[in-house]
Image (cartoon, rainbow, N blue to C red; front, side):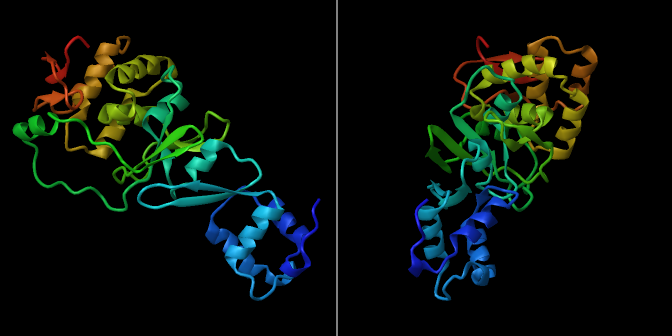
Length: 294
């Protein structure tokens, strides 16, 4: 083990011991700076020692590692003590964030694909505000073009991490689950995942992948009652229940009583399964346009 240079004034043994006794192996710069401030005496740190020099010393002389995530709107840096599961590391990028969409489909084994884009939802601080009532012409215009996607992305170890600034839901349906690398992560549950997939199929590999997820969910004991309860609490402006009802019926295997739960929501407008469809077919029961040949 290399000797600590005398001039640093830092007691390596005490620093390592403190890291080892922590309940987490993931740290921010602020946490490391706070430790320095609280532990100067026990570490025999020089009074002029600052956070930057302390972290630099730890990176050079201990098992501390730095991870850079150059997101376009704000760069994130995390520090780990030794090895930390990748999904746990990604889950730490935003406070109270959780995995959604294609990542959640994978966690719940609703897809055979291994998505290389990881979707992390960081909820907005304020509630979404409606700018008026829904009108049929407005629906037609909104779904004529492609669905917007978050540009807040960065590459890391062969993955694209996409930060989704989702609407404020109070973390509705978020649970702790085991990630692809056995990490304990925060992710939307089965029912919330199916809703999110219907709302944003562009984040789930497209409508064919979403339909496959609805088929597979039957064997995962999905609760349509809970799904409908979530829909009521989410109170979307657009009638996504029509798309969800269509997916359930097209998937096959769901009971008439389960489908009726979706038909209890009002079906007043013509709606779309996804954005930007070139050729469409129409389902009279759900008043829904969907891709021709789907």
